[in-house]
Image 1: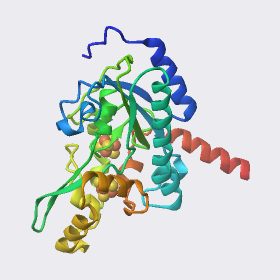
Image 2: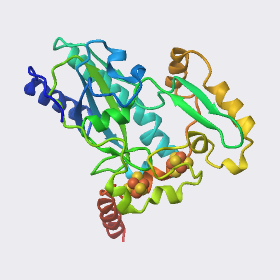
Image 3: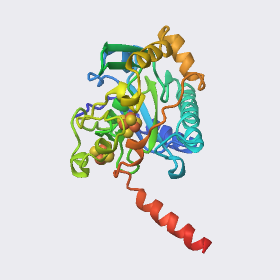
Image 4: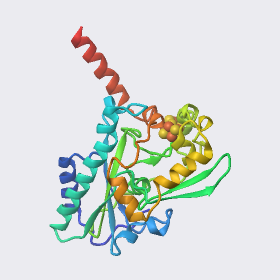
Length: 287
Ligand code: SF4
Ligand code: SF4
């Protein structure tokens, strides 16, 4: 249970939500900045703002036509790089909105937040860890927006994983949302029968919610020379965290990940029904 802040300001919260929606945000929530124990101290809100009290989290969904299982021009623009740039803009606009009302606020990077790479184990089945400055997915769970599915992505009740996340860390007295369960396999994954695990070309998903980052990054481990791949990754993700952050934000400095199968096939995207109706209506109109 979240303990509400005694001075929580419902009007400020409602007005921020309305502003963010106008800017293009969709699902919204607020997490308690003190409730991030599941992640390492360097990735908690207070590592970025000492007097942080809340994290405002929002989603922007990927249009169906751009949610392709493999990289495509539409996916890169509307589902990946282009969408992340748009989310960064919303975070920036919300930060300034809060600042104009007397609060400190700063956005977290929307995706490609890679500040380093750690090789945990070498050999034929290497284990690597991608380091980042903030855990957006954990923030979304703490803000009550969704749960982490077996595909290691945030799953929301309306759009499944067909979305990207943004967050603003602030000392504003926002009204907190109730967090959802974290670190457990959700019931909806058990009911789905682990469709993402079965169809992952890399066999990178274990069924526990964890992902093998090496396998996911190479996608076809059986076709790759492990040593060459590790050297390439170490070169790509070398440098100080700030140098890497700048490189990632360059949009052209790191190649796009070309697989999105576990996101696009998740049956939790209940809007699929709308898509079917939309396709049918379009086909009928064209007939
Ligand atoms: S495809 Fe199924 S198992 Fe995988 S995340 Fe979606 S609901 Fe969970
Ligand atoms: S992105 Fe592709 S390779 Fe990576 S876990 Fe999902 S389905 Fe597997």
